[in-house]
Image (tube, rainbow, N blue to C red; front, side):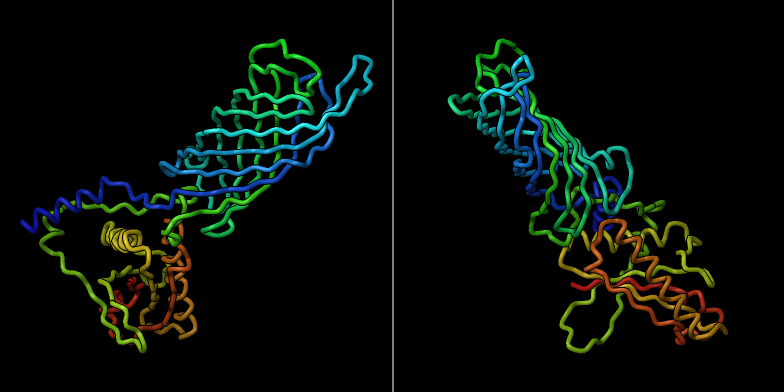
Length: 355
């Protein structure tokens, strides 16, 4: 029965999504506005403020509630190109918008940049000197994100809100006689996005990367029959942490790219550790690089073991594990394996997970 359960668990790993990421974010922005309905000239331009709350359904699709406020001055434009009376104008809006992460949609990978397309309906609130009106709108735009930390991103946004079925012109000079789209409010802004959630060590959906390490399980029965967790027991001063069953990644002689001589073995090892780190967001990973005790200099082998540790570290970071959770160490020659027939064991990286 235990073997059947383990086989089912392994099968589930091959078909379930690896996507565990934080989903909530809030944003704020400041910028300018371009407002008009062909009857008014705009005065002040840099007086736009915006807020947003977003929830990601997946790493590609999200939904958000956004709001904006613009305060500017409008002048009625006469036919002879002279300006009429000045009007103070306040404009507010609330929209429910859908989001698409274009980089994820197009399968483009970037550690720092991505572009979100967003659009959705809403309500606009217009307040002039001597009139008020509330109308429906539709908003669309694009947001460029630059990742600063796992918690913070810098944003640049351009959006246009189209207002429909106004009863008054924007400058309050008369009734609006047109149906359909009567005016547009365009905003160019910069701001910040803050990523929320208790799982702060997990990447947000904006930056989550599906692992390119997919477990290859060719013979489940053989795996089950030969499953025996490898545990590295080390005594460390002042450490009450629990050592979790760990894995190894092996390398060929004088190489810093993982060896694939055992099929997909090293990828399975990396995936097992990755899965544990995702399921246990408070756990950390220590990556320890070694080299075989060959005739090469100690300095060379120290550098080789460092490069091996860095190579595996890059793989975990690319899969979405924060650098803050990874400690890379290197030790050069592992003289415990000083006979040539066990040098293959010495050319390795140890993956040690701690709670």
